[in-house]
Image: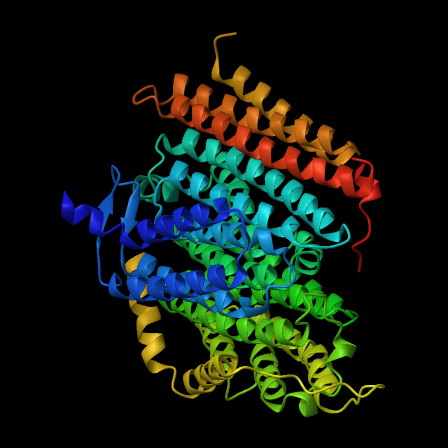
Length: 474
Length: 102
């Protein structure tokens, strides 16, 4: 029995973190320094725990919960995302001091839920884990101190999210009706033989709606810009990184269900991918707010990830895993700059980046590399990710799709370069003081930049891990 | 009345009414009720499939219990945010919440 519980250690650790912050939330006087260091320490240990558990394998809870390399790799990514977001919280000015323990509490529960999500192989477990992670985020968004845009973003997020999860549940009920089981292992055996029936395909598509909402894929994307802008910068960083990684994982699990022989499903995924990329990139061009721009960029990146997933081959899944990790690092680097430049917790306009190269050369350089990574310029990790995804799609013969994606990548270059231009070429009207960057932040920035470049040039080790994880999936 | 089709039809009707309500209603409470209708449609589906197609084990009924519990949690969070919306904006009409655009 002892042996089984060790499989569950990363999740138990997250639960422990949530309990600790629940206790801290009870204390009478707010103490942001104590909360921050507690969170930093515990999240750091969390990464170590997740890394230590990476080789575990087994099933738990009446086979509803599978621990394999696929899930463990994603758990490490989630723990890292959580740790890095906590690293950004040195000046958590967007949230009232007495709410800081709650902020960390809901981040922990959300990480816990996402770790459960990537391991779930039973429909009810997936549903419960997805809802727990969504509910934590629904509460995190309106926590921001401010003038009402936070509650507006919060209620929009909740309404769209609740709708998407209801649609997903309706899809689950059809899947249950068609296959008479709720275990993914058994569904995998039955579904390919009935995938031609309308009920099965409708069920699968409705089920995917709930996950598309998490990933902000067209047509469930419209919450993203409002929520990105309305939520506190750190919360947005979390939604944009960790939450997206978990969504990629669960979409892969579900798409892998179809067994790769459903033309309808591929057609729908191709359409959604093209729509997401095109819409995200075109609307991003006109954005003035940095977080809104990143929101539309995340919608287009959801489209790129879908290309890897819809290839439904081992290399396709491996490329999508690699892309998710690359996206996590690049986006966190962007948000690091956003959080540091807007250190009073306000929204950052792109024009406010003017003169950044003099105020803080390091941050400007990090922003440039991260943005070039998002655009897919070598030698960054973003280029490697895009290359792998497109290569996987080419293997399957989706030439048109790849050409459209490449045109999209070119369009996206325009607005990414606008950001770099603001940071490097534009001078601000008034003389702004230099941005003081603390030593730990410098170290963090340098580490992120190094990861982006080094794994962009030498992706082999990372790619091996992604391939092994994809093999565990199939 | 004792056929699967009847129940599936009822569930689909509830679900469609829910979707219609979400788009039609301007009040946040109304939208929340419409979402509950959608969840209930899914619950009926689970119960019907359980009763007619896969009677053993009683997975469908367990699902319905879980859906009810989770829907209650969702309603609690939604109502608390709606109260916050009312305090800040003075109305729970979704048209008042139009600050974020673009």
